[in-house]
Length: 450
Image (cartoon, rainbow, N blue to C red; front, side, top):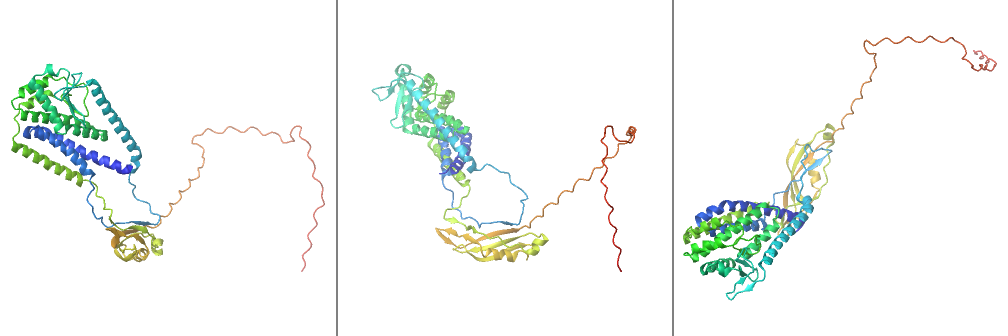
């Protein structure tokens, strides 16, 4: 996938996932009240469904006949569209920035995960299969993607009763059994990919909260008489100072008030659970189809229309050119499998009868790339609008500015009198004049003869 295609896919995926996130965040609370926490947690399925729908290829649609426009003469476009930054122009700049942001986000999550593991200290395997850490913050927790294990705090035996320890173990085991660890890893990957989308990070926090509520509901459904003990265990849990990106743990910024209040709600009945699941499935189909249908229509690779090969412009009629007449002729051309015009027809012309024949004569010599259908060239019909615009005369030169005459200003003061002229005579110390040489007078002209 080239950079412009990757950028376009990122933009389309970000838009589709954002719409799905907003929809889920609006529906999660009503779904939880009406159908239970498990249904609200399942509603987050709409986000990956929207992403997958956008990445699927769009429907193969046979394109409409191509229209080509020929401008003849020295025509000047009447309007110029504003230039926008296309995907191809922006991709060389935005794609490297996206890679850097994704790597930075992945590094951040890696440091958080490593910090949490280092804070656990050495793990000691217990006879019951659990792993006991040297700390108490944020535990118990379920860790490990390939070999999941349950880690309990150092004072697990002293802080909790036997009933509470069993409930907490059932809670973490439910996370492992339902695949929540791998789901959280997928959420982290999506946050790295869409690091530039603030909705993705806000949705992750609400998603983890709904995940914990759904797990609480499953545990209470299996132990309906242990609601009080389960709530007391929540109150005894020490919250973690840092979140756990890859894993599930009892406490990091989860509203305990809402979790404890949820314990008082009745477990949804089977018919209500089925109705909620059906509603989520219907929403998934609707969101997926809407995201897929919203993609820009792309022609199928084997359903291309005829394209331009070689076009020789028509000859401009001399009479129309001398009179400065322009016009437009719409041609309908049947292109055969070899790309040659089999038949040329005038669909419309304005003005009629002026440019028709020259346009048809030129079109008979045009060459096209034939339409490809099922991998083979076939005949097709295209529409070619040909516009005739005469040369525009050069604008006349601007007139030269008029000569400016200087007149005496009104009420000007009289000029001062001229000084008296010096007496005539040779200038002082002037050298004497040199007399001109004497020459004989020219001879007289001879008399005219009769």
